[in-house]
Image (cartoon, rainbow, N blue to C red; front, top):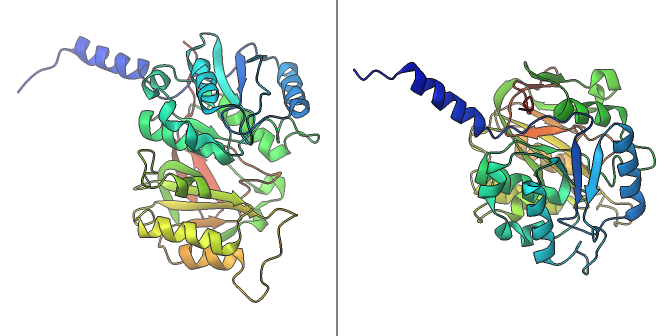
Length: 339
C-alpha cells in the first residue's frame, strides 16, 4: 500500500483551492468594469447603473470607447473580444458587468483565451445573449458565473431592480454564503404564480440561460452539458412554434435524458409582435408537452428572464430544486473570501 505524506496532501489541497473556479466575492471598495461584448450600450442607462453602484461603494471603470457602435453590435468582433479579455487580466477588477445582451456573443467565442479566464476567476454577470459567455466559460473553464439582470435594464432602469431581483443579485455576489442559501418566492408574493409541472426534488449543478442561445451553441465546442444537472431556460420575442423547435432540437440531442430538474422562466413576448394564433398552442401548452412527463421536478413561470422579476442563478453551483414547495436551495457558496 502506497502511503502519501500529509504534506503532499496539504499541498494538493492548497493547489486545488488556488485553482478554484469560484470567484472572490464583491465588497464595497472593489472595482467593477463595464464592457460591451454584445450589443451597443445606452449611455443614459449605463450612467444611472454606474451612479447606483458608486452609491453602494464600488469603483467603476470602463473603456473610453465603451459606447461604440458597429451596426447592431457594440463594436467590431475584434474590439469586443479585446475589451472582454482585458477585463480578465486587469489586476484591480473583481467583477465584469456586460452592459446588455442583444446580439453578437457567438461571433467572439472563438476569439477568447479560456486559459487566461480560468487563471483569473472574476465575477461575470448578465443574461440573454450573455448566455453564450456563461455556457462557453462553464464548458471551457468550469468557472462559476452569474445569470443576472443586466446593468442596462436592471440597475440602469428608471425603477431600478425589483425587490426580489435586487435581493438575490447581491446575495449571490456580495454575501458570505458558507452554507448556501434558499431562494424563496412567498415573501415577494410570487409563489402562487409559479407552476409545478412535476413534483419532487432533485440535486445537481445549475446550467442554462436563454433558450435560443442554448440552441445556437449546439454542435459547437461550447454545447451545453446537462447530464446530472438542473437546467434553467428563458426567452423573449419567440413565438410558441419557435420555442417548440428549440426544445425539439435539445430533446433530439439527448439534453433532457439525464436531468435532475428543470426551471422554466419567463417566455415573454414583445409588445410590437403580432398576437399568437388563438386557436393554436399557447406557450404553456408547448412547455407542458415537453416537461410534464419528464420524470424530474419541473417549475414553470419562474421569475427568471426578460421581466422585472429576474432572480439571479449561479451557474455551475450545486443546487437543489424542490418543486413541491417551489424552492431553490443553493447548496454551496458561489463566491469565496478574498485572499
